[in-house]
Length: 254
Image (cartoon, rainbow, N blue to C red; front, side, top):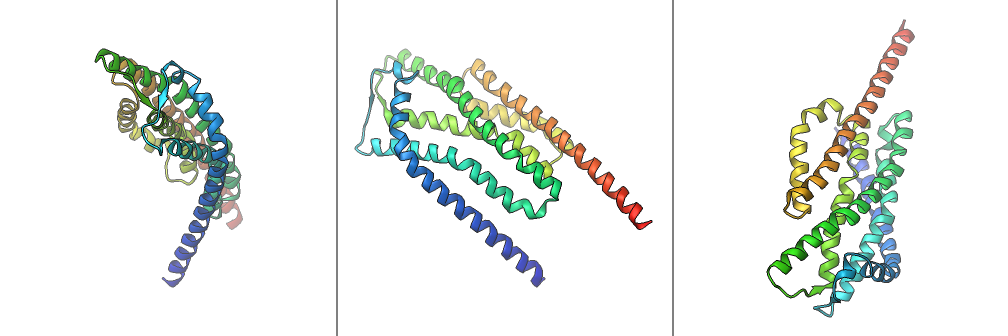
């Protein structure tokens, strides 16, 4: 019992150390993000759909500071992601076999790539649809279009960041399969519930019209199916390895 308690304390201490390093790197990346914020804000304000607005306004003395904070955090998050994933891998590494350690380490570049793909999909597809839909509703009510810069970019980040994280689904599923927490059979059983959850998420992040919902829900469902296929691939290799290990063990005992 004492050994289990000591082991748990060691794991929690190790986890705390990893989390502290992630927070430190995020803070440093955010400092760099402050310097990158202004050119990014200027670029996005001169790009569609912001360029179609007749001026963005500030409604509070704090709005400009809020903009810098939003962009600093976004830049810091993107920069910190590879480091954070590496720290997670280092935390679980002692519990993995040597071949699993090498395999899971290769997930980190894929996770970063999927995160960037999710950001791109959200910015170039979902965000314009959502923005122009709200613009159409505003005009239909004969309301005066006066947009706050902080509110505009908050609206944008509330769409971009959740979608970028959702694009991590295949890598997360593969990683959890490697840890033997998930398997393709369980994912197939959960398919109907997963589809329902993904459709609900799609309706929340898109304008309330069927076409937009479909354009977002379909790629997310495809991502789930890809996750099942990747999980099956990992699971099949695990089964082959276990079979070979049992066979070698039997021969050694004989």
